[in-house]
Amino acid sequence: MPLLDIDCISHAYGTQAVVRELSFQLETGQIACLLGASGCGKTTMLRLIAGFERPATGSIRLNGVTVADTNLHMPAEKRRIGMVFQDYALFPHLSIADNIGFGLHQKSTLEIRQRVDEMLDLIGLSNRGERYPHELSGGQQQRVALARALAPEPHLLLLDEPFSNLDIALRERLSLEVRDILKRAGMAAILVTHDQNEAFAVADVVGIMREGRIEQWDTPYNLYHRPATRHVADFVGQGVFISGEVLSRQSIKVELGILESDVPMECGTSCAECGRGCRLDVLLRPDDVIHDDASDVLAEVVAKSFRGAEFLYTLRLDSGAEVLSLVPSHHNHAIGEQIGIRLAVDHVVGFPNRQ
Picture 1 (tube, helix red, strand yellow):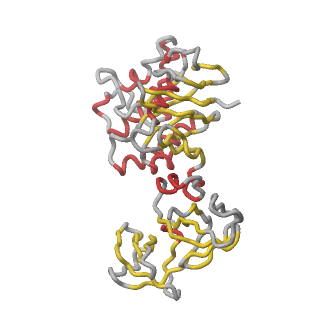
Picture 2: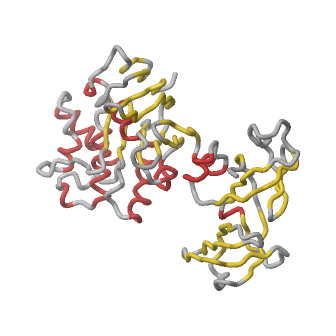
Picture 3: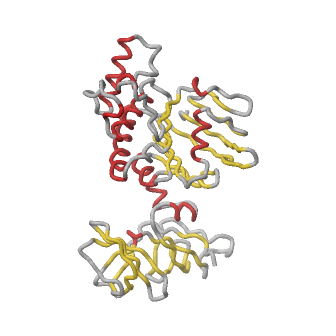
């Protein structure tokens, strides 16, 4: 039995549909992420799970118990769901220890102290319980907010854009710390973000949202290498599409060579039998295009972005099509220079040609 079961949930604000027949499941101890652009419905879905909104259709079950459907709405305070917000929401007049213990008023003084000590140790701040929020860094404050949400031992933790107020370097480090804390606590969680780096760093499974629906619910690896839709392919990572001619259900010819796929390719409804002149747009990621001085295939450098250990090159092919390539930074080529390239594609991804 899943910890959380979202079944065909829909919700609207007035006549504006925000969540549309959305379904997914979350297992005990699993960390998930709802990832998408602003306005796609991800925060509304979080509010529906928390109990701040009531769904128009569908049901939400937590530990096998229905907490919301068209006839039932369990109040938020009875769902045992923890929340972590982007502004931390710490009480400035309370110490760190008192902030963490704020929701434990039903326990004895000794039990509160023991639980607070456990949480301080979990977040690596065991010697700072007497300090106040303004005496801590932004990252430390976020960990305290996480500890406060974990202290009452909720069934599920919801995190709403928890790193958006932090600088990029701190966000990357803290996202890994938060994942480690959640895993050590054995806590199931759902993160909402528009930042795929955060999503991939924290989550076991990610749902790509678009216009109130989940287009793909999958592991970060599969979202990047095996996107189910063109939107997912465009949204996740970097890449370009180049036209290819299907030679068979598992072979396609592009300008840079012939690609063999271990998964049969679908051409769509335009051809009755795949493999006879059908065309697909093939996704090429920057790591699919390898710089190789020994290659007879040449491409022109039309743009480059220095990233420290590597360059991201934009390369123009003979046809005029452009591809991206990640190249170690000791290969510092000039704009306009011709360089040798070859393909190294492990996962062939193609979608029906738009033209």
